[in-house]
Image 1: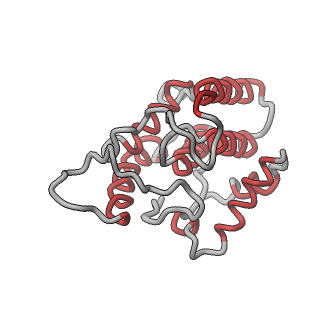
Image 2: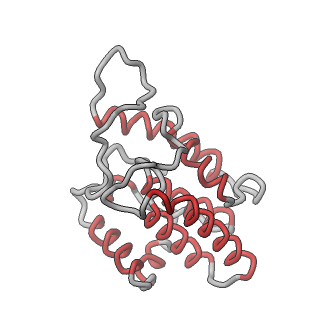
Length: 200
């Protein structure tokens, strides 16, 4: 699975590098920071996607979902795994994050137990709601897609072939992805579900 060194156009920009954990003896380019993040995320990919993770390893609890973000970005950023306290141009109000993230965890566990939807739709709904909440200062898109991939893998499906580099502004598939998320905002999940069926 490849990880991007390019931000998705329209994603939260990294215009504040406070909290960067990399050595302070030099200035880093945005590309270098994304590369360091990708190295961190590669370890998470191996841990959760190289084989089927158990429900003990990936319980989809509120606490685990927060810890996953820390696993993905904790080698690079001090704020990894910490719920944001600031307002962003995307996502719900900061004061609602903990409640909505707990609701998402409860919903996923309910959907999974009761087979409310099939695996593809649960994965798509999980992904979409995680993006909507946008709980962290940055890295929300990659974290949301990782949640979806882990859920797919846990249910004996291969992870989605996101091809993160295709989500950069240079690629036409980026528009399809963003439009699928916007349609899901209106309760129309069909296109996002179809994207979750493009697996390895």
